[in-house]
Image 1 (spheres, helix red, strand yellow):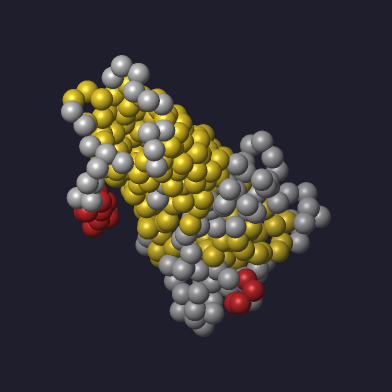
Image 2 (spheres, one colour):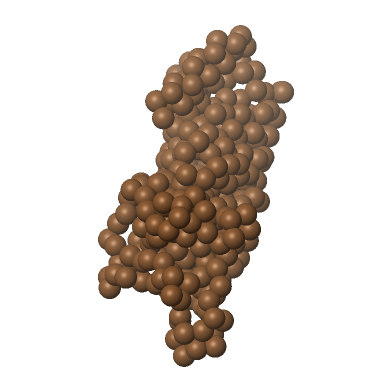
Length: 306
């Protein structure tokens, strides 16, 4: 994180050094963000509104007095919650969701490649053959904690000065690149039962918190790149010399998935309903698939331009 913040500041200084005329402005920006996931499957459920914070550098390159480009490099810290399995209240999920873990490492699950088993050619929670001593958790609620580098690219339309103020609107795209993710998970202790070939609960109550869990898979639960289309509005106050203080707000409409569509570590265990209760019928397992789930964002920013 320190390296990324240093990179953001160095980028600002380097770009600011090129500002030889007032067609170009550069400065610092920060502010809160608010996100919500557009869920398009019964396998998951949004749990409230996510929140975050962004800090970075931003600048304008003006083609003329009223039209220009607004660019930037920002570091985003974001979090949001998703419900799984029995925690879903508004719809009926097809199954229950499990994963294997060792300390804070979440084990890989690839049904197609490994015939329904977890790492080391073994079923999670057992020690036969593969030597995998993972524990198992039935996941009910997950808090995603993501770190991103965002590179907003907007076309800016602004008024001439009206007193000490000018007003503007922006339209463009906000791509974000994932640089880290962790999960805080709530769920039940579970284990693999070889007699029924099924994952079963072993704990009577949920965990309050299993913090800073991380997958050992290449994909980290969140998609590596996400893109939103944004529209913003704001005002700049010329309070001294060539220095402007600005406040703006905007909405970003997510167009790409925010979470990994087919999980590399979550197991969806489905009961076909032939019994009287979950586990009495025929059980099947597959990697959890949640389809496309874009994330929308409201962003508020305060900044300085020089």
